[in-house]
Length: 373
Image (tube, rainbow, N blue to C red):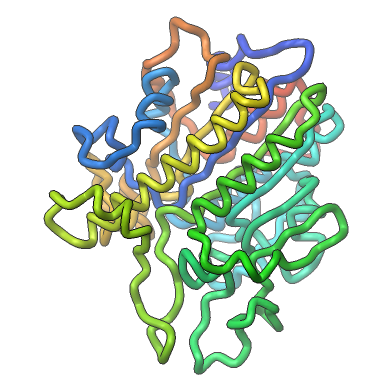
C-alpha cells in the first residue's frame, strides 16, 4: 500500500463543500532537532512549537539528501529517479515537464495557486518555470540560494562575469528575485534589496492572502530560504563568506548561546518562525485559517556546520538518516482533535504529498499517466 494512502487517513476529516486551503511550507536545510519543541527551547520557535502541539509530527518522513531532487519529488509525485536527476550539478536543466505538476492538478479543482521563495527545479526554458507549471504567481528565486539574505540576486563572484550583480541576470544566471504572473515573467523591484529574505517572502505571502477571493480554495507553496546559507562567494570586494545571516536584534536573543555560529543559526530559525506567524495571522485576518491545512517539511537533512539532527547520524549530502530523514508535520484547525499533539511513525516520503494533497485534501484524482514512478 502506498504511503500516501496512510497519510490520507490523517487528513480525511478535512473534506468540505469548498476544498480546504493548503499552506505548504518548505524549510531549507532544517535540522531534525532544531526547533524549540524538541531541544528544550534552546531555539526560539514559539509559532512552530504551537503548530506541533496542535498537529501531527511525522517522525519517519524521508526525502533526498539534497534539495533539488526532493523538491522535484514534491512537485511531481515521483521519486528522484522518476523526476530525472539526483544532484545539483546543472540547476538550470532540472526541468520536470515529463509529468503533470501538483498545481496543474489543483487548478481544475478551483484552486488559486501561488509559489514563493526557492524554485530550483529548472528555469532555462519558460516551460520549466513556476507560472508555466500551474502556479498563478511566483515571487522568488530560481536557484539553490541567493547571494545573501539582504541582496536578492544570483550568487556570484567578481571573477564570474556571467552573473547577476545588478539583479538583471544573463546567461545561466537568472534574474532574482522574480515576480511573475502567468506568462508575464519579470524581475521584482530592485528596491527590495536590503530587506531580509525571510521577512520579504513572508510579507508577500501575507499580501497574497489578503487579496484572495475566499469563495475559492487557496494553495500556497511557501519555500523559505531559511536556514540555508547565503551563497555569495568570498572572492573579492564586496563579497565575503558569511553564509549564516540574521538581523542583529534577533541574534541578540541568543546572547547566552556560546558559539557565534549557533547564535546566528538560532536567529535564522527564529526569523523563520516569525515569518510563518506572519502568514498564519494573515490567514486568520482573512477568516481562512479555520479552513487551512498547514504542511511543513524540510527539503533535506540539516548541514552539520550549523544544524543538529540528533538522534540521527549524519546530515545533508549523506544517505545516513540525518541526511534523508527530516522534520515534517501537519497542523491547523482541521486536524481532528484526537490526533492533535500526536506522532505518526508510519514511513512517508516527499513524493507522497502529490497524491495526499490532490486526493486526500483537494478531493481530486491523480491521472494514471502521471505521479508515482
